[in-house]
Length: 166
Image 1 (cartoon, helix red, strand yellow):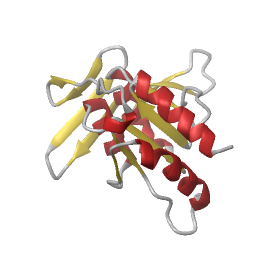
Image 2: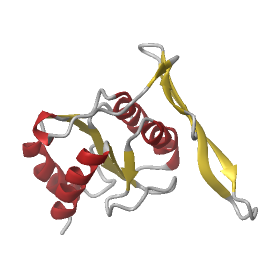
Image 3: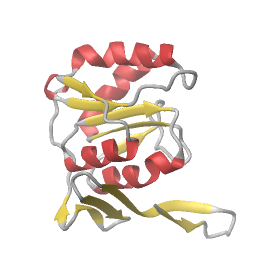
């Protein structure tokens, strides 16, 4: 991912370009701020699904000794019964690319770093999706929590997630 510098020179600003490469399928997902998200030369759009019961979502599982497994379990327990299925591929960047493509309808994970999410979050936003932290705030590049989906599912997933974190 590439960031633009802040106008006042105090650091880095928005992500302006991002690439996620899937070597097994030789697929390149890429996005440029205000210019869209793409898979090779095909424009990407998030899914239009509106019912959680029809939705396939993805997440990551905390590594042993890292992250809050109890918190993850509560969230999984809240979201799992409401969706058609949950997948765990292992790379947040690719999960986010699949949300941008509409292959997954949503994604959530915590304990992430910038290199996990910067390109993928731009892909989702440029494909018409919403990305936030677990509190519903627009996720900055340094957020370690990400929730991504289309606008309708994002709202519904956020409600379940927030309920699990009370």
